[in-house]
Length: 216
Image 1 (cartoon, rainbow, N blue to C red):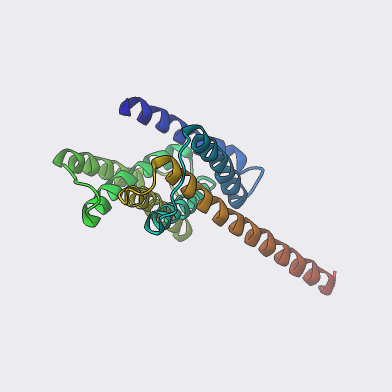
Image 2: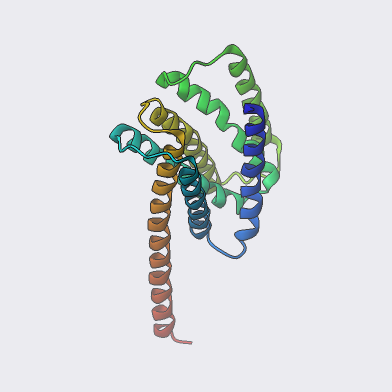
């Protein structure tokens, strides 16, 4: 069953950048991140209610799942900004390099064991990503794009690490952890969206004031 679950997860994860690419022509990355996390929160609540699980407030677990939600939101926010600047054919392989970082962080933190097969697979993924970075012309290599790439990569790798750490506390179920993770991500998305709207409003006001003071 884990193979079926992985395939379904990969399918829906692959739909996010495709739909996000289309949505970026109509809305900002902050609003898309807000909408995505809002839908994820509703889904997590439905799953939690159907499972009948009763969340137990346990501080270490809440902290780890909360950090996982913030990292997931940050990863997708930077990914959406990256999607707006690059082709999806470039974004998809770059996202897979997160696997190698997750294995490395899992090993260094003692959360999970890493097998030689995993190390070999990670090395092959990294080689493929480096090939894309060096030889594909569709990838923009300016400083801002590189920053978005690194930020999205690191936050994407940290989210499952924090989630695993929360589950290792053995105080909260996966359903409760999913809800807490999406709740923290949604709250952070609301803050970012409000800040973005406020920033744009201030910028628009200053621009209009400058236009009035500037002679024709």
